[in-house]
Image (cartoon, rainbow, N blue to C red; front, side):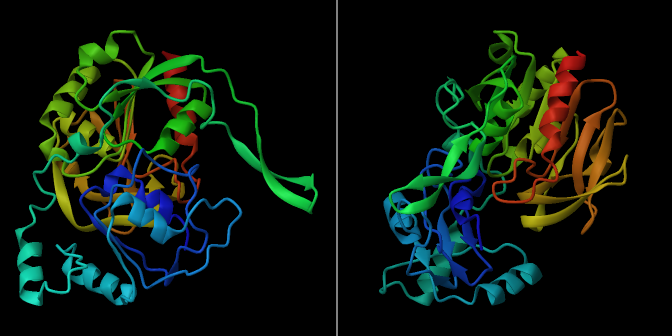
Length: 355
């Protein structure tokens, strides 16, 4: 029902057609504040029905207007729940969306089959920022907002008010493999001063200004195609700097440790994936978006799997037994999704402070 704007602007969906299972999408429109990156990234958007009315005081434009503005084809009138059931049986499929009535079924199938797919393809280079930059130095995007009531000529209306921000007293470097902006917001809200660097940055370049920690972001595509990133992270692990990875960052760390990744049948999507912390027994309901996973049998003895998915037992978290390095496969920043895992950002801060 919610979160379609964040999904459209999540770089992890690069090269993929996204379908939503809720039957009515677009109810609250699109606003410029809740973007998760500098543009929309998915290759297409499939829904059962687009809301003809936008009903939210924060909306800047409709879903249809945003798709058109972004050059992303969308289609409605599809039985998306039947499509989802088919994907659950067959696995993720190649597909084509066309607005050209002259494209027949045979040609559409041929075009879908000709697509290069995700395996072995580096989509990270397409979504990473080209230059390093300081994230939100004026706290304009990271400020924690709360909804309050304010008086106006028309009575009581809602408005957003800023909550105080902590001092940015811990400098870190965040590798942009396709980073979601809410990850950067959450890091800033935990007191980190964040410098975002391109995916191709070397370990020496990342360590040049002596950051207190390194963050490895989410991103699209096959982690096995990112040999340059794996080598960089391997060098950073050997250096001993504290490291925290999310999603693709988790998979890159798995390879840097010496492990292997594999493509899942249909991946983990959505905001209700149960993850168990093996140390505490606590279960978190998490937001996830990934089609690859780390093979636990390939990991060396010095790496501990500390979180697993309760649906299929796949690896959801790891930590190094002797070095200050940990990572999770899911998205603790949510946006959209539950906030059960938000304390992981504080855990990263505490890990750095202990050093």
